[in-house]
Length: 439
Image (cartoon, rainbow, N blue to C red; front, side, top):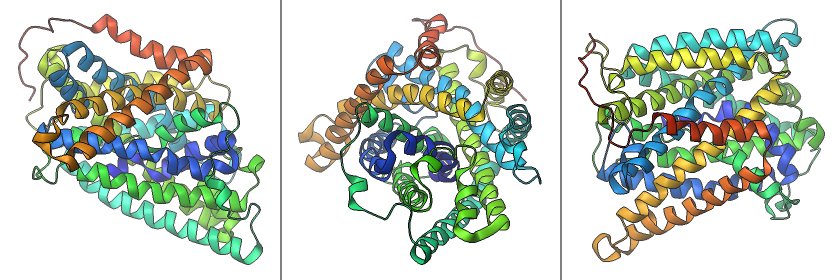
């Protein structure tokens, strides 16, 4: 589930072109450098999940360790990011599907991609409502096929570069820190989006049969798996394309890389299949995060209690899913009014990064506070679950503050405004009333 949530195929297709446009030849280094705070936060989740497994994950941990309002906004940030992501996930899915048509222009048509992506979105939601056990089995198969295709594409790209020469030869300078002014923090925020999603494993803590010692391992290990693929594709793209070409491949970078690597139209379509599988997987996992977080908040009274109900037949919080399906369809419809697919993806990635920085950072500080007593937990656990997460959380706070003063108005409105909107639904004493279980 952790790999499916980070969705290497999807993230590469959607965000790698933007990262190359921001960091240039330093894109591979950015993926390595900014993976460090993600590892710190994944350790925080591992430590917190071992002590307090809960469907609300970051929301519940922050509420228990700090206070109710801070926990509420942690959960709210995830809910807002998830709703915005419904657009980010559906649009590439529509584009990849339309790439199977003879006319490639359909893959960049905004109305067509949003319509097809919207249909995929509704279909995925229906499958998810059927129950998490079905979803987890499907995810395993889909992720395996995706990783096999991605491996073939990146190996083919490497062979092509060796045989015919690289546009940008492999160099240690790719991992330098010589970022242009403003590019360092901007690159970091894009990388935050790259890695986001592995934490869905924590939201399934109540539905997972695991030991305390093994809690959180899925999310932690998935960060390393996805880092390998992100780094490999960043290097392959730089070796086969110029910087100008690379930053213009936001519609489906993996498809173009497969074709350039000599795999032809068939290879390109296989790459599109990988993107489709990855997009479906990440949409499913994000729906899981939204539904489980809202369920936990409803169960606790932080949100209306009608959402804190599990359907007896499927054992899933279907009311939260119905809400998400409605909100997602509206957001996807609004996205169809944006001029280009590239602009939809760029704006949504930035807005999501702000939300993610907030709730990841709060979780990092929560873990640091929980494991702060070095005498009680021991030096090793203190370093892993307190110091490292605290430093990682501080780095994410700095990045979020940077975004507030440098991003465009639309990103601020969606990113910061979306978080502030939570004030309207905040009830310091909680929502009252009991709700009957749904059949």
